Length: 254
Image (cartoon, rainbow, N blue to C red; front, side, top):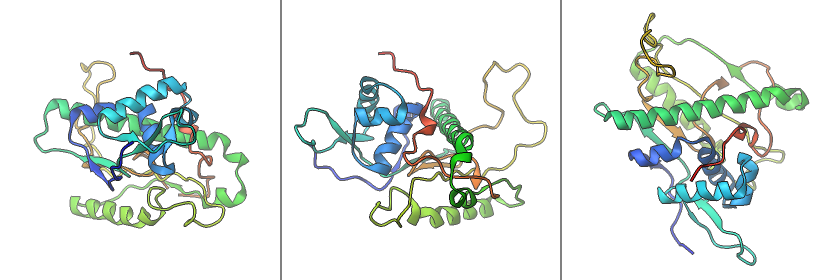
């Protein structure tokens, strides 16, 4: 049993850790531990759709990179319990980062955005079953801004500060109002690429667009750092266990 305390935040600069995070199942498991507390591999399997043995593999990988650790055992202690070592994580782009680091950062961004899109699509597919109260509370929007770099950075900081009190990593079920459930906050703020920029005709399939270097910062706390902003009277909020976006994971190959 370990006695280490959960840290508030981890700035990820190690390529190995980034590669470990660039896997949808590991991101889902880490989010589960950060937002809902300690869990077993069996409980993590409910979020990922994988087998408990596959989740055990991913948990050990996360532990190897200092992202999770053993939690105090439950009951008869027959099943291992895990907890997150940090309440959130993120990384910032480096002006002189190595190609290896840049590739690892972009892999995480791609995984995060794919997961975010899956979560939104999963919600939309069942939104007709939501109550009017939740449908009216949902906000999906898109806007083009005219800003300089400092204004964009300041806007991101203001939005980040606004959501802190509502983060599932900061607020316990006891502190939240009756009827509270897990909801998704997704945000993208970035300068548009110059017109005409894109993947060169000679680029291999799947190549990243020109200028697709890591975002100025990527953060994750209560869920995947992600895409889509909030906006209209479209239905909103995913299911209460936050598991919809976890489908389609493949079992690991040892």
